[in-house]
Length: 391
Image 1 (cartoon, rainbow, N blue to C red):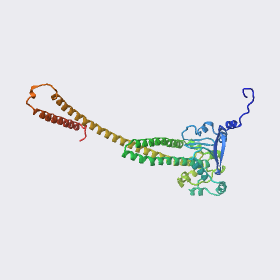
Image 2: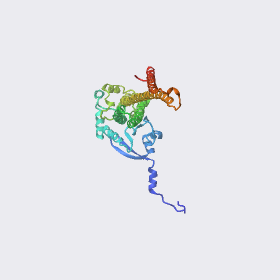
Image 3: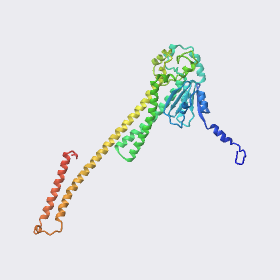
Image 4: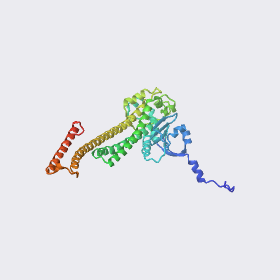
């Protein structure tokens, strides 16, 4: 209502903006590899995957949260650098951000997740395959959907951090070698920027590594990630009594560990607390991220060694300047004595002993000069004997 009591109609565009202010774009990918874009608010996402608001807040790109992998009743909340996703037993929700680094993740998910016809064929053929055939066929992936999605995310983030580390190494080692050969303000500033970038990258890698290590140390947290097992209500991730939610996918790092390890997983199928399959998956990427961290540690040690070498060079130059200062100070003392003698004999004071003794001038000059030179060499000899000057 206006000031004069007139009703002002609402702006439809403003109403639309208010309604969509809390909505976010999400990319939904189901088990068939099909993707759709959802423009919904956080409450719809919370109701869809049944998570709390504090878990969804971890995925907010406006907030700075460390790398996190949380297992909930029906979802896995994943926050790994630019990969912010919610994984359920049959779908993946990705934050639809304008990030070019997410494109490879989406393509890899589409490639790893089998198409619809492959799912039906896999379900029909899976009833006819025996357990022995599954053990012998080490290249077949029997991992559940959430593990395949988790593996894609872990592989993407590990590869991304490894690529950033390789780029940093490529730029850092030549810069450090150039700095050792020529110390200049330009080279020092270049190394300073590289060291700052290395410190930030090391912190990011360390967060991912710590999260994987913490997850590996807690068996209960790993058991919470078995969404298909909890959804089916069975005691084993490979039991045939539950619904067929797991489908074959292309072999990856986690699925190629060894045939014997795969056989041991199936052997423990009757144990509801069996987490060996997930443990092998996490260990594979933990070793990969730990190798990346070791590269950064080696680079840091190389930078520290370079700094020590530069400090030694600067100390050497400083010592040379101190020696030069000692030489100049010693020569100045000797010349001051010579100037003192010359000043005494140059005073305009009448005295009788200088009459008819003109030869005294040259003897005074010679004796004074020799005495100053002897004194200069005595000072240098004393300094060398005390180790103040290198011979």
